[in-house]
Every structure is written in structure tokens, then in C-alpha cells.
Length: 71
Image (cartoon, rainbow, N blue to C red; front, side):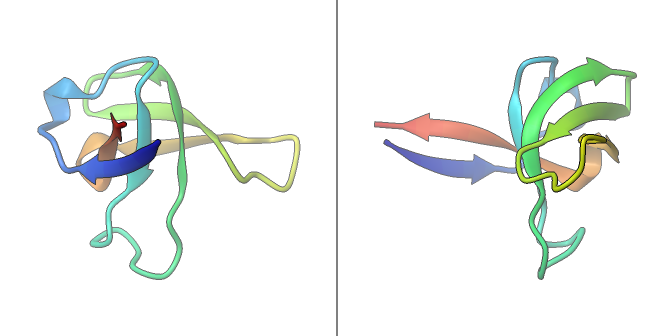
């Protein structure tokens, strides 16, 4: 199974979606995880690669791409 990332409008990112930061946000450090809270134009996600117990991060939806699963 492979994952492709697709930049989507801010409305289509919802709680439970798997997302990652866009290259425009930071081309050198990609952050990915699962959306756990939705506040309109911002979300809270659980960082997949967090190195501390504080693994919750806040992002603007416009800085994210949603993960699409392709089999």
C-alpha cells in the first residue's frame, strides 16, 4: 500500500483524516499525523514522529495536504 498526498481545500480536512504539511510550509521537514480536533481554519493533529509526550500540534488547514491511500 502506498500513500499519495493531495492538496485540498480547507473545507475537506476533517477529524480522523491523515494529513501532512505542504512543501510550501517547510520543504525540509515534513510533519504528518491524524487530525483530532477541527476549529474551522485550524486543526489539532497528533504528530506521527513526536519525540516527546507532547505530540499535539496546531496547523492552519491551508498548510496541510490530506493523505490518499492507494492500493
